Length: 80
Image (cartoon, rainbow, N blue to C red; front, top):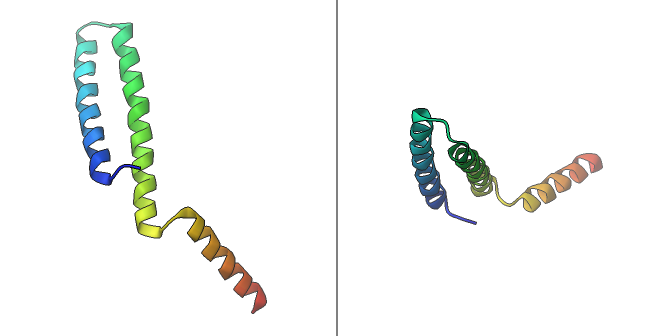
């Protein structure tokens, strides 16, 4: 898993690259450029997903520990 800074740097780099491709595409339509933009969009979506996941993990902890705490709380509520 990457650090937040590394993810931000990658997002920034890919966003700049995508901007350049959009400028190229605005000059004339090129299906290859359009394909590259779609690939960059998909990669950026994955990076943002990873970013959200990492932030949530840093803030709330690992998913398994959260689920375990919730189950313990449920058992305590049922027992009360």
